Image (tube, rainbow, N blue to C red):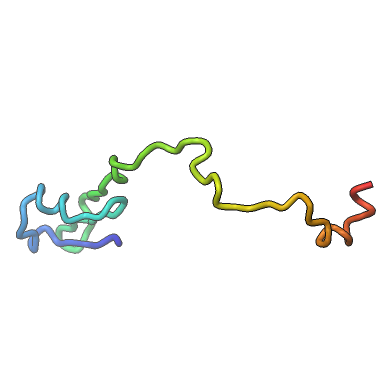
Length: 77
């Protein structure tokens, strides 16, 4: 969730503000109701990199099941 915060209302220090942000969210800082800065947190760096085969076993395909292919017989020939 993005938020707007007036500079006059900023009561916490910058490190506390950064720690309060969820990954990917941000805060727009305003002065006299005009935006002056935008603080956006990075996406979590603790995410593991994607690896091939990490969804293995989540989907089952039955090659012997030809019942659902009857309507496509002309395309399979």
